[in-house]
Length: 252
Image 1 (cartoon, one colour):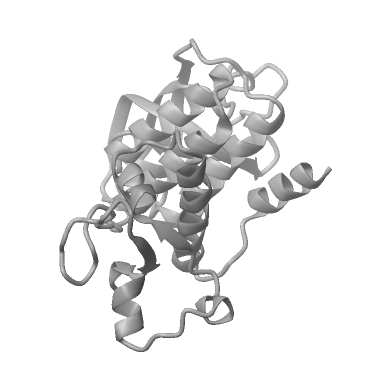
Image 2: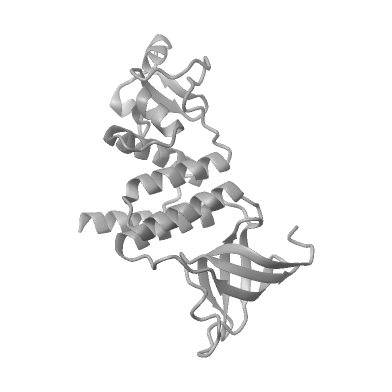
């Protein structure tokens, strides 16, 4: 697909990242509904009177046209769709976290329509001032599922039996949710030092996550630990800059 010449018109998209290119232009990483993450050169976008200067903003829904056949296409037109408040404060940092996850974990020109919709809903919810933690957890789960972690949250990893709400589980990446009693029978050490970053999870938390319900405080706390473990695994241990900034902001 990257080598085939194409002309794409009226594609819904979001800007993930921009950086200068040559004297007056920008390279723009976008996330498009039908094409995934695409790199575009916006020629002349840094000129004082360029029509693109006030349009190529992060966290704003756009219609975009582009053309070309190489790895980096040429931006032809960008138009604001409207209806989205600018993100500020903590919501802005959370938005950068979403963008960094997409840039780091998705391949270029690999369509993710469901993930696009999940991202759009997350940005709109951040713009409405909705609580940030449930927004981030829903998006992280949608991202992992789209990357292939169709985690059997509602079923025990080995037996396929339904997760028991009152049960206590570890989520083992190669197996899924495993009940503590099963691990004890296998002779596994359940000492906190041996568990590392593997969080203990209630069965109800797993069922809530499978249903997309993050209203319980315990579910919110435990799902954060689980999703962070899975994302760290997917990143290969590489740190996220936006996560560091958010942590520093919380400490302040």
